[in-house]
Image 1 (cartoon, rainbow, N blue to C red):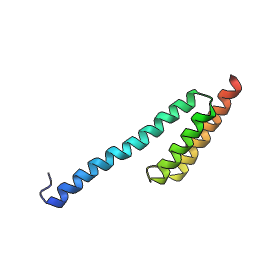
Image 2: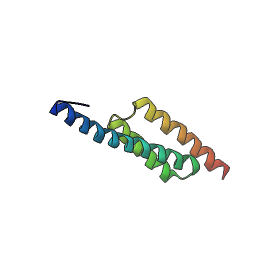
Image 3: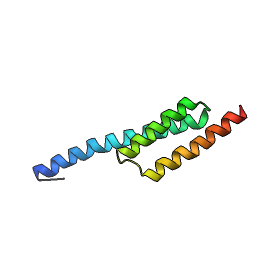
Image 4: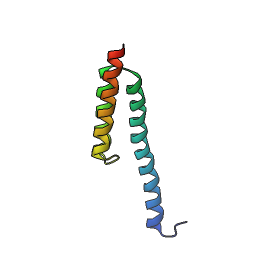
Length: 83
């Protein structure tokens, strides 16, 4: 356990940041699952915004955001052709 006042404060800040970071990443994963199962372009647009926001906030790497968007766009096109 931390003894210094500043160490205790940094632990509190780390907890808040961790919760905030997990929220951003888990929402992105949620939208990825929704987009994979549907063929709508509106879901794909929401996913694009979430991926770009996660990248802008520094939660994921730029290449990962682009890879997510590319793979799910491909899957959405495949679902649209099958329906």
